[in-house]
Length: 457
Ligand SMILES: [Zn+2]
Picture 1: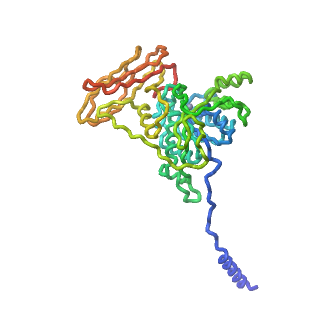
Picture 2: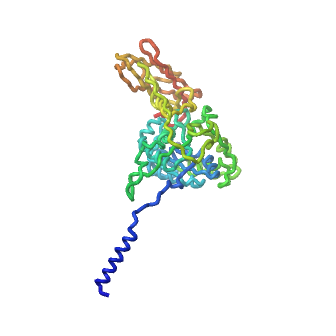
Picture 3: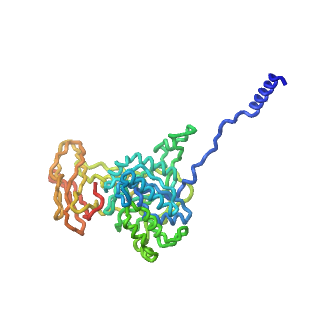
């Protein structure tokens, strides 16, 4: 055939083919959120080993075919290392490895670490500052939207005598905020924007998510937490692991060698009979503190009481209005003042509370009493701060008379030194402010003196 005629026929064929089968416009399939990530319970804690007390409960959930995931807000890198010279961020990497192996051993594989830095004080505000609160909050809300938990379980935010780690409190603060904000379509909207490019790197393509219930567990063994939430038993036999539930906590703890090497080596040397006897230390009834619920159910009812598979709509928290301070007034600031406002902002009104402000510090240490002073009158005023201290305590600074300018607010702190002597009873520090011969307020702080522990600040 004439080559030109062949070419003409070919072109005609191609033209016909194109006319009959136009190139289909690309219609990618509609994708639903990845079901592998959906969980029933999301545990939000601060450091590797924080999970220890809750592992028996998580293993029970796994036996019930429920899905769990765990978020660590820091790597726990500020501690010592019993295993080697690795410290700081390298220690954090080691602790992440220990933790992942620990949780894998009981069947928990969905574990994420956020960018918070381990901050070893009792002051939640220092933890939040060191974490760059907004950054970790953004990361945490992303994880809530990604994992879509029915229930969030986290450390109790609050200032109590106990270990009272500022990072534990901060994990509870951020988890509470995430509970209230992850369902809000205006919060971190880039996470909720659909991808606009094939290889999208900026927009997450997530959906808002409203978690149904929020539970806390405290960093203190105080009786005030009894009966404030659901309980569970740990003496049953785990179906998958074939060990009692309490022992799942005991076994996962053994992976945290950088923290507790000598103690763990002792545990590892135990024979079966000795391990069984450990139930008195590691077993018993577990419990949570009821935080919030957006479904039916009671405070002490089961964690999953009232929960159905259907997602629920976003419920903004019911905020309580903040009272304006009296024209001439003084109040306790720092973490104490923060929590007063925090719970009101999140509509959490029924949490167990200490009788009054309390703190545990080392014997011989300095107690900081953070104060906020207000003069909303039109003239300068003099406020006098006087202290009543138990025997052996001394004032370092902060007492005396202060002149407050009109329409002004100030931060102030009183520093008092605790005695070094052994004292079993709680000590009460009394701080009274007066003006023009009238008492404005008396602030009492209950202090437990102990041999060590985290510094107050
Ligand atoms: Zn911790």
